[in-house]
Structures are given as structure tokens and as C-alpha cells.
Image (cartoon, rainbow, N blue to C red; front, side, top):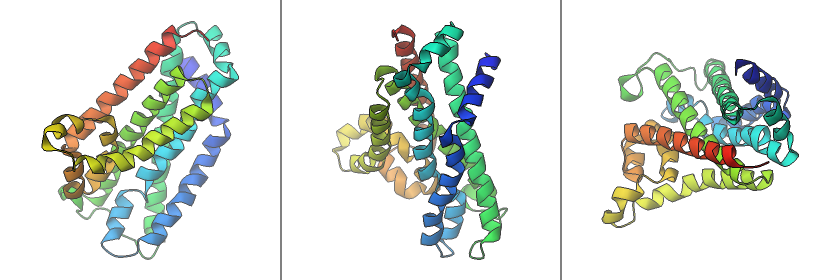
Length: 256
């Protein structure tokens, strides 16, 4: 399986979107840098790696759609299935390579955050000074990065499930982006529902999109999610596994 992972990693590295991703990250960081310039907002901006919690999901949806779902439309998945008889290995390889790409994108964002923090005069914050949860700002940055990786893989698992159900790449991309944007709109409205429904509806998948925001601003977003940060984290991981497994079950049984 290691050989197959190396082959798929080679394919992803030679995709245009892989090389465009770093430029997109830097480009999309600029509005965040320009919009925050006060002493209160600066630590939050650095902690969030200049908005990577909003940038990375969009980029990872594009990467996963290009790398996985497009192969169904182009029928190149048949070649891989012919070379690798085990469908489980094919599916896990694709998921592993996308996960590694997700980690690499966030790693690049952290490096850019450290560079920008020291390079821009309006920042230059002490990364070892306590910020949230009595932890250093650097620890907050790394924790926020891990939280966002979890959320992006949650979205990727949804995309994999949709890709195995629908072979039209444009539709998969549209639905995945729709899930992301609905995750920004639906959860805040839950708090206005009758109390008897909150006990169950707070566990809906779209609520998991609040995880990075709640880590960064617990008092505000806890009132929206009605879950603790730990509950959101565990539920997000659980949903990611469930959606990935459901995607595999469809992939295993489907005839291409």
C-alpha cells in the first residue's frame, strides 16, 4: 500500500491545484491582514493563521474534488482499480494522500503566520505570551491548526461520500461547497428553536463547522452550538469516520 500511496502522492503533486494552493492561501490571507489592525484583534488573527479556518476548507474541497471525484468522470479510476485489485486500498490511499495534503497546507499556513507576525510592524506579537486557556499564543496557533485539520477532513469525508454516489464532478463540488456555506448559516439559527428540539439538533453535522470558531471564542459560539468544545471535537471526528466509511461502502459495491 505504501507504493500506491507514493504513486498517488506523485499524481497529486503534479496537479495544478496543488501548486496553486500556496498562492491562494497567501492571496486570501491579505483581506484578513488588511481588515484587522487593532491590538485586541491581532492575537486572534495570528492564532487563526490569518483566517486559515475559512481558507483551508475551500482549498481542500477543490483539491479533493480535483484529485478524487474528477477521476470518476474521466474514468481514470478504472485504471487504478485494474492495477490495485483491493478497493479498500484504493479508497484508503486516496483518503490518506488528501489528508497529507491537508496537513501540508496547514503547515504552510503556520509557517506563513510566523513569518508575517515578525515581518509586519502592526503584529510582532510575543508568541510565548499567554493568550487563550492560559496557554501561549504559539500553543493556541498549533491547537487551532489541529482543530481546523479535523474540520477540513470532516468536509473531505463528506466529499468522498458524495463522489462515490454521484460521478458528476461539478455536482460534487457544488454540493460540498454548499455544505461548507450552510455550516456558516444554519448553526446560529439553532439557538432560536424551541428548547425541546435543541437536545437532538445540536448534534447535527452542520453544527460541527463551529468547532474552530468556538475554540477561538468560546462564550459566543458555545451559545450557538450548545455543545462543549470537546463534544464538538469528538462529534466532528465521529462524523468524519462515519461519512468516510459510508463512502467506502458505496465505493466497494459500485460498478464503474
